[in-house]
Image 1 (tube, rainbow, N blue to C red):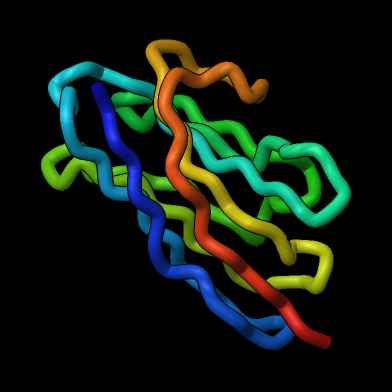
Image 2: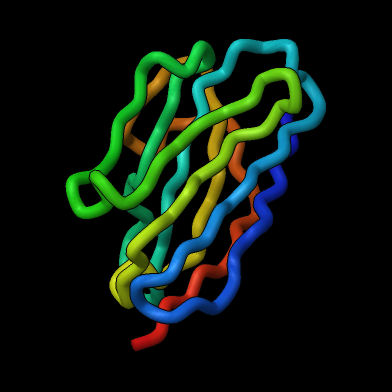
Amino acid sequence: QVQLVESGGGLVQAGGSLRLSCAASGRTSARYAMGWFRQAPGKEREFVATISWGGFNRYYRDSVKGRFTISRDNAKNTVYLQMNSLKPEDTAVYYCAAGPQITTRDQYDYWGQGTQVTVSS
């Protein structure tokens, strides 16, 4: 019903910035909360940030607070993740997710294919 496509990943040096985008298509009329998760090799997928449909409720994992900012533009059916002061431990595949309820758990209905973010020292 909803397709999500991430973009904006790449290779950056520690301290650099990157902006991820997630474009939604399909049943975009639904008022979905959207979030970002990431998964590093050998580790489980973990929550990064999430935002409600209206954009007034936002949550971040502690390790990215003050560095990452999640936002959305419903007119463009797109959610963004601005990542500043990147650290090597931020290296992971970043996934966009959408669902009817905002949550920090990976309990979303739709997922993108992911975009690789690599932060070098």
